Length: 511
Image 1 (cartoon, rainbow, N blue to C red):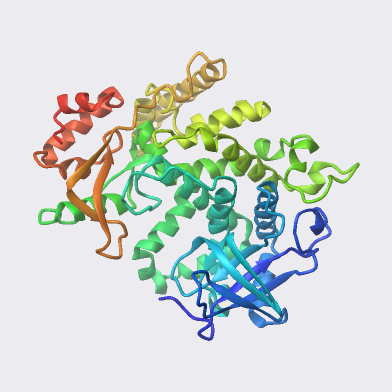
Image 2 (image 1 turned 180 degrees about the vertical axis):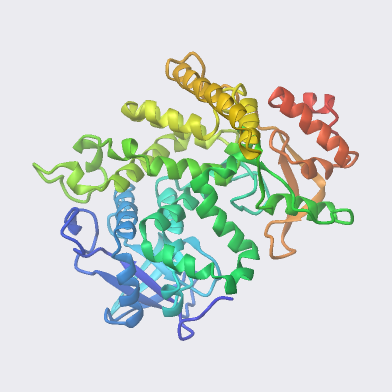
């Protein structure tokens, strides 16, 4: 349940103080270098925007939050967020963390800020909204801050994005659509980054996994959180899922769809196809996490001209870019700049992550070899070819059952094949996205599903991409049985993807 802070909501405004001798002077980046942190308690508002007044800086919650946001990782992401505001032309607005009574975390827009006798209406201000109080801060709930700030960053450079076409709720373990996966995968990647960087989050998790607290990890959100930390690190999301051993005989098709969607179980011997990977926020989170922790990509700095666009004041003469921005800040700025450059080129039929990779290679050619190698190794080359998939699956099985000689033999074949594929992609003998089929969307007007897992309403008609649809997605259409749906997916797997809806019809799909 949502906790309240003395029954008031608060907002955190981050100017940025000189918290450390390292990094640029605050005036280079932040609009109000004199204020370290402002805490704003929410007032009752007559207008449409939330509003609040500034609390004294010596407020106990303010000091508690400041201690955490002084940690280097949080300082890096806050710096990047403000740099992107500067880049977008918003030189006056601060970064904001608004704590409300809405359970969950959000990237929100619009705020009325009251500071002493001055009131500012900021309808375009984008900020993080969380529920916080001293207890929740001490228990580590600021670990989600960077996830939501990641959404604010994306929103700042890419304010108008095509809508995702899947009505399913986003979950890290599910498959929805490529735009939802791109947005949420970007946000999720920050959760693992925060966990890596902040020892206290690791210690808190160890406490939470005490045997006395074991039942809490059975709850859906806890399962999702665990996957966001562990499966992102181990690249489990590239595998297809399996259902838990429960009695499905009497389940409605909607329940079966949700069971498949939320199952946290992965089969290491089965890979997702290319489109399933691109529509999985877990796979995309893994990709972003690996990009943002890659030592080559993060340490490849650009000339000072690149960074000037993110500053409020002229670039300091004689100052190296390495002294102004940490490697994490550097790679995040490059990521956001890539998003900004391709944002106007996309339609609802585009694949945003493929565009991201392609544009990064064009904008930062010195990163091309490392980026494509990372991408192909993470996805088992499936966006380029299916040739390695079967080898990988057999290797996974041999390794699982302890077949050492067979595992060793297949690993050599796989690693040699991946090296050849990477070389072929780098020399343009094959495109890195040559094995990605079309998005073939079909609406099931006969079945509406809830858009959230926790509430029966609102509902929308099920909309599926034939080339990523699950067995139960297909079986929800009138005239398609589960057995027929399984046959359709076997045919899809055999040929890689359906090239048209007519081809799907020929293989038994009815709509």
